[in-house]
Length: 194
Image 1 (cartoon, rainbow, N blue to C red):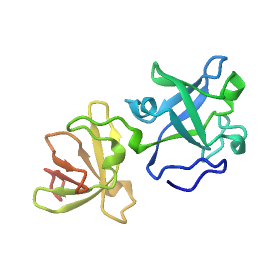
Image 2 (image 1 turned 30 degrees about the vertical axis):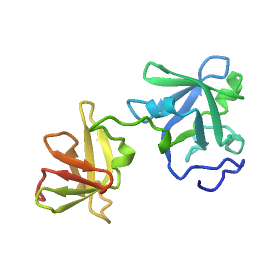
Image 3 (image 1 turned 180 degrees about the vertical axis):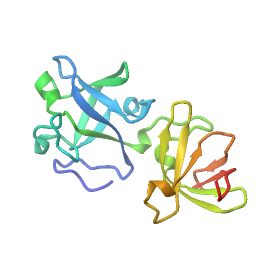
């Protein structure tokens, strides 16, 4: 466990940011959440959401970041269109839900549902080395892009921070030969000169 937050809540070392609270929903303490994944199962799989204040305070952000709890115990959560709505223990009315606006939501990676065969969470792919069939190191996964039909790996060599120098490799079977999480490696059919 990582160091406890200001209110004594111990943060797991594997905490992953999965969404943000965007506003209150109704009058009974429910709130709207924008999930960072098109499949928000990580939000549904954990009944303990860890919170952090937004990095930048905007007009719709938490009014009093110091009063933001480090932990929400979720009692109900459901999909609502493109969003998720949730209700937490001790958040009993609209003002309580509004006070959470802008909070970033984290859940332990260990509480994610088990991925199916040939399915991967983005958080597990970031940092993996990308090697082509010739054994050449193309770089490491620094992020992914969701294009709708499929994801695209953003690959960069260590020290490269310029997006123009990144390789964009479609994360599809035509180009990805194998993913080995234990070996922290992705093998691809991709040349150095692509």
